[in-house]
Image 1 (tube, rainbow, N blue to C red):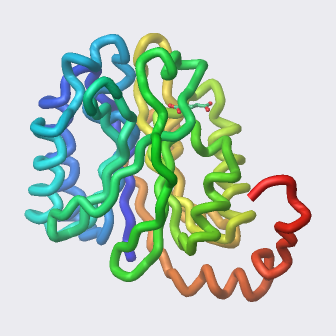
Image 2 (cartoon, rainbow, N blue to C red; image 1 turned 30 degrees about the horizontal axis):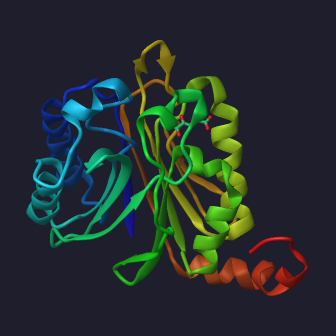
Length: 264
Ligand SMILES: O=C(O)CCC(=O)C(=O)O
C-alpha cells in the first residue's frame, strides 16, 4: 500500500481556496505516483483562525465533506481527509475524516485533547466519543490529531483494538520539532505499528510550522521524512505483515501485565 502525505501550507480562513489547492495536489500526486491512500493535514480548510470559525467552519450542509467524497471517487483513492473545523449545534469540533475510494465517509474522529497553548478549549469542544479503529483494504487503522500524540494511552488503546497503522494529522509548530519527531518514533516502537503523519508547513499568526511529515515502520525505521519548510509530498510503502513480524521478534503485547497497572 503506497501512502502519500500532502505536506502543504494552508491559506488562512479561506476554505474554497484550500479546496482548490487540495484538488490540484491530489490530481498531481495521483497522476505521478498512483498512491492507494492520500493524507491531508489538520484544519486544512481554515488553519487556526479560531475566532473566525463560526463563520467559515463546515456543518451538516456545507461543502468540504461532499468535495472530499467526490475527489476520492473521481481518483479511486482512499482519503485520510486531515481534519476540519466542524460545527454541530453549539459545538465546534476539530474533526478528522476518513473517506474510502468509493467516496464513502466511513469514519470521523473528533480531537479528544484540546491544546491549551493554542487556546483551543476557548473555541472548540473536545470529542465526546471513544476513538475507534477503521479498515481500508482490510488493514486496521486509527487516526489521531496533533496534540493527541502526547497521550500514549490513546495510541495504545487503538493498538490494543488492532490498529496496524496510525495516522497523525497535525499543525505542529517548529518550536517543538524534536518533540514531534521523537514522540512519533516512540509511539511506533512501543506500539509496533506504522505511524503515518501529515504536518503543515508555513507560518500563521507568527507561528512557524514544523513540516517533517513522517512514515515510520513498526520497528522504528523512518521510511520517509519531509523537510522543514517546503511544501512536498511525503510518500512510502506500507507492508502490513511487518506488524506481525515485529510483534513476534519482541512480543510486547504478550508481555503486558495490565492487572498491575493503575489504569486501562
Ligand atoms: O503539542 C504540541 O506541541 C503541539 C500541538 C498542536 O499544535 C496541535 O494540537 O494543534
